[in-house]
Amino acid sequence: MKALDDHLLKLDATDQLALLGKKKVSAVELLKASLARHEQTHAKLNAVVAVDLDRALFHAKALDELRARGETLGPLAGLPMTVKDTFDVVGLPASSGLKAYRQRQAQDAAAVRLARHAGVVIWGKTNTPVLAGDWQTFNGLYGTTNNPWDVSRTCGGSSGGAATALAAGITALEIGSDIGGSLRVPASFCGVYSHKPTWGLVNQRGQVPPAPGSWSERDLNVAGPMARSARDLRLLLSVIEGGPMAAKAPSADLKTARIALWLDEPSFPLDPQVRSSIESFAAELTAAGVEVTPISSPAHMPTLMAAYQTLLGAIIGEDMPDSTIRAMERMRGLARWQMARGGAGARDAAMTLAYTATHREWLAADAVRARLRHEIGEVFGRFDAILAPITPVTAFAHDHRPFARRRLTGSDGEVMPYASMLNWISLATALHLPATAIPIGPAADGLPVGAQLIGPLNGDAKTLALAQAIEDNIRGFTAPEMAR
Image (spheres, rainbow, N blue to C red):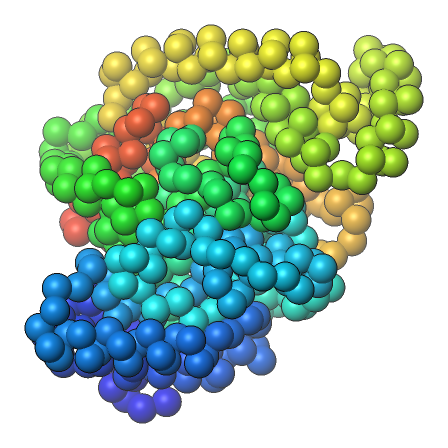
């Protein structure tokens, strides 16, 4: 790869756009640089799994011609970009890891349409697990995506291809989604930024799942930006949410910021090296003038987790075959007995009840959510944001066995349930709160660690402003060796 291309791809989207605006680089040149990085890294990473080069080159050339004529262009004009393969794109329908979904025609998803209107040049789709349903990224259609810090480890999921492409310099912006940590987990594992918006802020139309053509705005699920800088998150969110809210929010002043540090939760395991990294980062915040206060549980987490399990299970159950759901419905009586008895079968029984939840059971869980969201308002009356882990461990080795056989192992040898990946992300998801994932430096094993800044309902601008202030004054993105 040419030295100029390498330099361009190290820049974040804001700096790439500045060069485009000054005509120091063309949209075609920047697109070709991104394609070259993709070709250079594809065999090792498998991040971008579908490409529409002809359409992208046509669009890039058209934007260059408009810029040369002095036409007014959108805020992202000429920037090459990839999109997670759960969003429909003209010429690149969302497969969500399934061949049948790929073989159809599609219009741009709502968020994609807004990004394209702002001038991005969409050239490829990034890999995702089947139906976005895992914290690892692999499927039978496109294979496995690797972590750019260590290819023997997962990049996370379900926006794993997106996070890998960002960290490796293949793309500068991405649109991902999150219902169980799918924006935040890959960002943490790959050392990049993401933002899980307040539920409902970004239109989900054109995202798969649910089934193609659905008009449903699914509970819990969000679409959101991923990037290599906090300022880029703000820029892309301002585009895909259809207004200037995120981009024009005032910058945060770290010397007046109040952050609650949440690291202790009795039922949530946490690898000592992840905890140590976040504690060290909290000390850096304190040194920069932030008022950091350790807190206990910001909500009663056993109650929240039970409600979240029902709310999430009802959504996952919608994507299961009818025959599977009918079989589970016949097992509900046994499942209740197993739940009451406890023991090894209680978790599977709980999931059976969640996947087959009645409307009345869903309403009860929703009522719990509403109460807890009201109660957590007291925490946000005292603090601007909650700083918390995203994952209980750093990126783990690829493990494609059935979920029930997977385990996580901490650096101290502690064995954790695979479902522990759901713990720390549950607060923001269940309560519809915004959460900005930021890189905070390497753990003792040299792999990235991310933390999340959780904000109050509709407090997206606040967490993003804090993230940018941290980036400007403390630390930001560090590229893996392969992208330096």
